[in-house]
Length: 225
Length: 405
Image 1 (cartoon, rainbow over the protein chains, first blue to last red):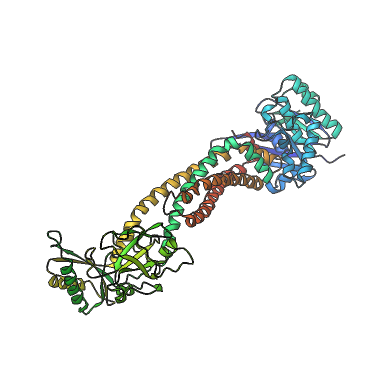
Image 2 (image 1 turned 45 degrees about the horizontal axis):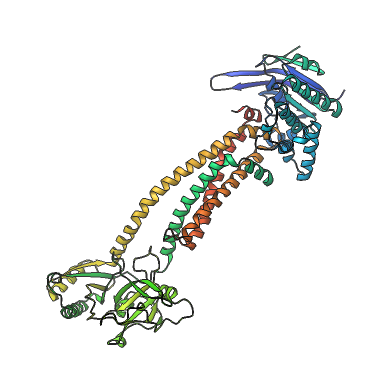
């Protein structure tokens, strides 16, 4: 049995303000193996994005343990987490989160900017990633000059440029029309099958979730089966 | 990092325009104030050219002068009596006539012959060699004027170094040079050739904060046809107290009926002169500090707004693998580069001050130092202005920063 790529054990996430506490995740335990394509489903506000953020090491659980490739990561500080995020994880957000003042090529290069490596090598890898998503002819455009689908493909190119072992996609087709959604789903499937990238995708769409190997259903911050 | 920062700055040039203008304006204001402060400080550090301790000024007004034709001969005769009476007093060391006392409000200027046919405007005074020696004026070339110049066809003068530098330049022997302005020859019988007999160290009659200016000291002649002198320079024995003032006044008024005398120590005149010079500067500095505080708050506000606007970007960069410190450093580098660009524009404006001589006190020496000080200060402010908001933004968890709107 292979070692899970990522595992959560009894994870709880509580958001606290001066006036109230909101329990976003409650006793969530799950494991995801290398090479899997899984989806997370649930109604709005059930904690899907919070779960994805905890899995992506960009949010800390209030309680519980997170293990990445056999290493306990929930207690690590920013300096130890940053290289794991940079080298092992890739993010695709519903609202793309491209930097509008950077050209497509510079946006894609961004994760490599925080690694050691020559500028030419970064450029080569960024062009390669853009070719994978079919945007090799848009390298010098600014994000605002692209359609929503193209922007999401740029975001995917940015997510895969560093060849991460885990890709986290938060409703990657949520802002796209059906044709664009289909293109993006096809792209994620190809990355999973052809490159063996593990993918965790948050979605509202049952049809898209059905195309993944496993579905985690979340309700009121708890996993339901 | 530098290439990335440059790319971002260039692509955000429209958004950065306000910041650049704000920084350039803050730089120019800081520059003007710093240049003025540098000029005053550098003046204060320079030798004054005379000593003022134990020196008193005696001012005298002849009440008969305004009402009738004044006889210069009778004035010089009375003055000689007054001088003799004062010299006989036990605490008097030196007493000599002088036209304009250091630290007094008045100044005299006249045109002199400069290099070639050019004229040079210089401050002018008239006194004796004994007076100059009493206040430790240093002779650097030639000789003091004195009895050898009595009854000559020329008027003997001493000039300071600044006069020599501005009038003749290097390599010209000033002693014996004629400096009465071109075209003045034969203009009335009283016109005499003006000849340099000695060069003194720079002498700043207006005090420690004043600039060094060309200065000419004419020899005092008792029967000078250009009018009487009513100021006396008095050197008293160390430790002489104010009670001696009454004795001086009584002595003068007994020897010269109709004269009204007043006595003021030079230390008192110096304090008054410094406070008169510094008062408008203090007011200007207070207004300026207030103005700079406004500019700094504005600058920090603009920087704050700029960094807060980038909270999502900071979250994104951290999600993509940047450590919080790395993001902070990058933002500060960008801000410093924008700041440096604003300062370059500010420098282009600032050098117009000495270039076009817009403000007399801002010369190249003061401007150069002021540019360095102002640039360092503004860069420090920009760094500090960017430090706190970028620290706040990078403290958020990346997921939290990505949600920020």
